[in-house]
Amino acid sequence: KATLLTPFDLEAGKLERVFGTLVGRRIDYADLYFQYSRYEGWSLEEGIVKSGSFNIEQGVGVRAVSGEKTAFSYSDEISFDALTDAAKATRAIAAAGQVRRIKSNLPSRGKNIVPLYTDVDPIASLESGAKVSLLERLERKCRALDPRVAQVMASLGGEYEVVLIARSDGTIAGDVRPLVRLSVQVIAEQGGRRESGSSGGGTRGDYSHFTDAVLDGYAKQAVSQALTNLESRP
Image: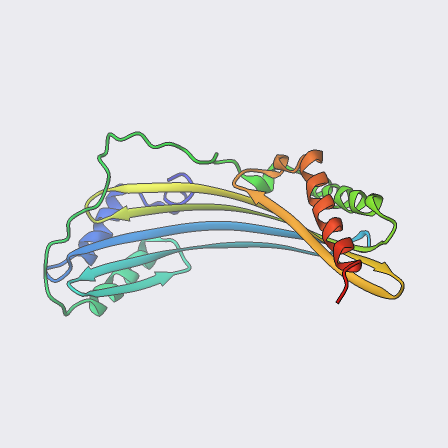
């Protein structure tokens, strides 16, 4: 709510007004889907950062179900006016259709929710310089394993996503989804022959996941693949 409703002055009363615009005699069910995402990416090659990216996306989708039909509209702008316009468009699309009752498939409201990951913001969990150092450390680990390693390419990415769903039955549910990933590709060269190997992984957490032990595992797997390919026979 603090990310997707409060900054845009969308308290519960305004959501109810949007549903009032949306839900009519021919609409059986409706929901609003809010989403905010921040992405970043870092790429290292030949010992230097070759590329970097940062992106922010946000918006809201409006869905209505009328019998067998489903109508959907969306807006990149999160505001009461944009929501109202999207609701009117969705209702117009779903105006025709068979009216029937739809049973809610929600779990009981008192049921405990077991968190599968934290709500940490991975992008803010590490300074930019430290992210570059992480990639450089992985490159050094790969090169130290075998002198035949001629090139190392590594990429690091993070994502912070917040979603919120408001249903026409009054239910509101949300989730905060962190994600980090790290990948490495190694090219080994011997006698004019070049072969590659790759490795990597990630987690729904922050960059602290990539400890020296984890980096060692990625480096060993990528180099092992490259050397196995280098020594393979037809």
